[in-house]
Length: 466
Image 1: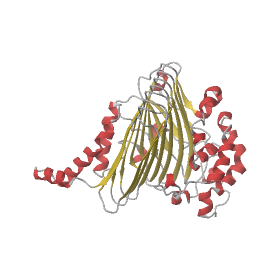
Image 2: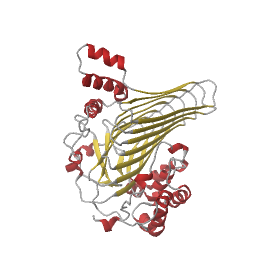
Image 3: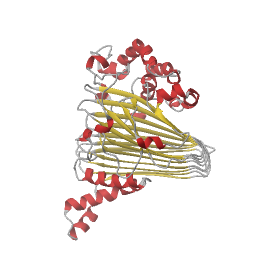
Image 4: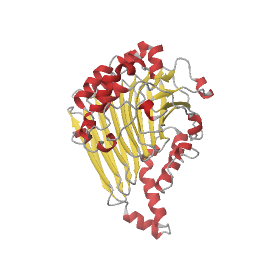
């Protein structure tokens, strides 16, 4: 794949204001919308034009918007990215570049290369329980159109967000997983997103996850970059969790400093369902995670947590929203940041309790440690409560390592460097402990310790990460 094969920019000299307004991409869509649709599926194309019209109205989000006040995308969006609208094959064997499986996890393993599902043969995937459908979204939308049409875009259509609208206009493929009623996966599903290109590249993919009544599934999403170019990924994931179902969503980002990762996770929970989402950023360039969980059933359990370890010029913003629409729901949210050098962090957490959502219990905590005076952290926890019989709380702290604890440890012969490491590791431990996959939890403890030591945070043996 060369530069000419993937570039369709209408005006390479467009101004920054035009780029942020999306002018060049609007022109691209108008010129190439038939090619975009031809290389996707009818179920995805059904809402494509509506998404495009919304993007024309909204443009890309800027830090002037309240929901993006901690996310500055001006510099990443100023880059002239390539787009693979004609789905040109990119030669790469993901098994040769991704060799960092979590030891002992024995997952079902799947790949998305840039913005397309990458079909590979893996003996582990042949043992999927009967009725489960996992594959590329575009392909499944053609083979099971009634299933995809029922769910695709139903959550993203509610979002008045320029990035989500842009994804709806340009995404042509992604990852699809369907777990039928009362089927429980015996081991996790691992989705590896690999960014690969010889030139600065943008990828837009859409994931659709459907968990049936009484079903259970665990999904581990790993983000990796391969080449030393500028990448921008804009991924939207819609998750539907039915009655009495259990779903765990883990997202681990380990990309390079030139990568911009824009991720939107939208979850719908029904009666007596249990959802865990754990979002961990170990290494990155610019990251924005938007997570919205709509609780549309009674007696639900929701645990949302995340962790950021940032240094150099890394930027991470987590924007979360948990919406209690029904009574008797229980949610807990925990996010922690450790920032060094001139890294920047942002956290916005919204807890919304509707008038009819009585007996709700909702708790939110954000704690942050700054290891350098030049590092910056901005946090904004919020409660919006319309019910009167609830138990809700929120809190945020920003500080440095506990000097008294550090002094205590040094008095007992522990070198200062090791003492600082132990305190930081203890600070992040409860986020890691919320991982329910033991092999992944053990692996994360090792990766977090290496990252805190300032060693390469990448997985061992991964060609991408060398």
